[in-house]
Amino acid sequence: MNDLVETPSTSGALALVGKGPERRRPAGRGESDDSSRPPGLPPSESRPHARAWRREVVGVLDIGSTKITCLIGKGEPDGTLRVLGCGWLRSNGVKNGAVVDLRAAESIIRQVVGNAEREFGRSIDKVVVNLSCGQPESRLFNVHWPVGGREITDADIRRIVTEGRMKAQSEGRAVIHTLPLDFAVDETDGVTDPRGHLCDQLRARLHVIDSASTALRTLDSLLGRAELKLDALVSAPLASGLAVTDADQRMIGTTVVDMGGGTTSLAVFAEGQLVHTAQIGVGGEHVTRDIARGLGTSSDNAERLKTMHGHADLSGDSDDGVSIRIERAGVDAPSFELMPRAALGDIIRPRIEETFELVRDRLDGAGLGRLAGGRVVLTGGASLLDGVGSVAARVLNRPVRLGRPMNVVGLPAECAAATFATTAGLLAWAASVERPFGDIEFTEERPAGFMNRLVSFIRDRV
Image (cartoon, rainbow, N blue to C red; front, side):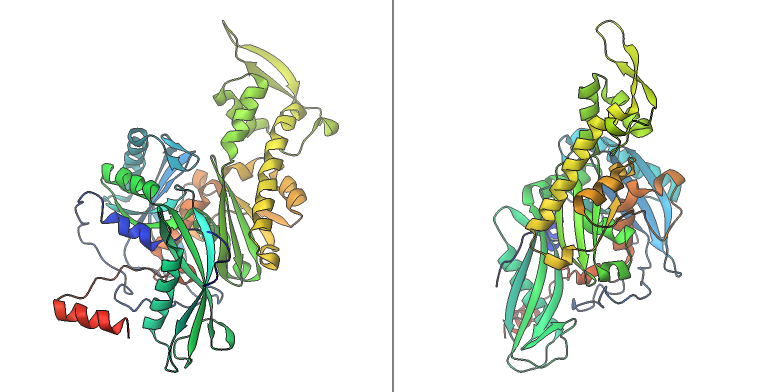
């Protein structure tokens, strides 16, 4: 019952799908083997094991500020993911993770999904989508549930999670993920799976991720306009973490910082669980705008300079002697001049330092203590800028490495970089039989018939 911190969740958003316009159901739609299985706690992510994949092909859509990407793929018996279709284009209509122009975003989504479908050879009509809109937040809850001395069942797991979701409900917000971190059975703490234990009191520590309901309805409407169905929403930092870390790294403690175009998101993993997420409204596009303003050039030229010559940790005090050609916007015609590469670094460095100072402040303010003290993995397009790793290590005072999508086969060469970490993580989440980190979904159908519903109602409350 104790509200400890703040974050977002998944099931409330799934309920929004039914409120949108009617869509045709996919031809030959197949559900996973666990669709009728009781929604108890899946095996712990902290124990490395061969991942079980769904049999069907899945589609995912990463709606970002810089690019929009669609992947179609499936899991392979060897544990890898195979991409069967890929489409991506420069984003339009999306700013800082939020949809700001429905028409423009719809047009890009139709094109990227169409490109992926042509490569795959068949159409799709449902997608798993990343959650970046609606100002996602992360919260931790302690919840108690009386068991009365009997054996704990799947129904008890559902009840205590439902209780936590009710505590997390707030006006204008929808729960996206409900992640049990651990359980306590009477006086025994740290129980991973309490089913089968006998106890009087069951306690759970839950990580809930939520988002603004109106933003989610807008997202659902956008997909409907593009003739797609929202299959599920997945927190963007959760997806990035799945793509660039393994179970052992998540066990010993890792913070994944995904540096996108419009936002920078972070996910803290410890003891095999996702314990915190956050999103900061600063990204690579802000660096581009700083260069354009500082040098009096166009955004396209600023992006080119950043990509080809940019360095986040090169200052005038350490001039490497390299000169670069700058095109400055003029009244009648552009003019060109040479300038030291270090001067470009002087423009870039303050924004990158600011980004990691904000990351550090978010980690310090989350109250995670030693859980946020592990190594840092950088991913996302802005992490590819030279010198970003050294700035991150200096500001965060922690070991840093660059993360790329792992165990994904069939990605085009240009897509197998850190820029596509979120998309690859979405595919891993969508293709998995068991939801990572024990995420509990409330998607089962209600019992048919009045008497069956009455019996179910009584059973859930006795």
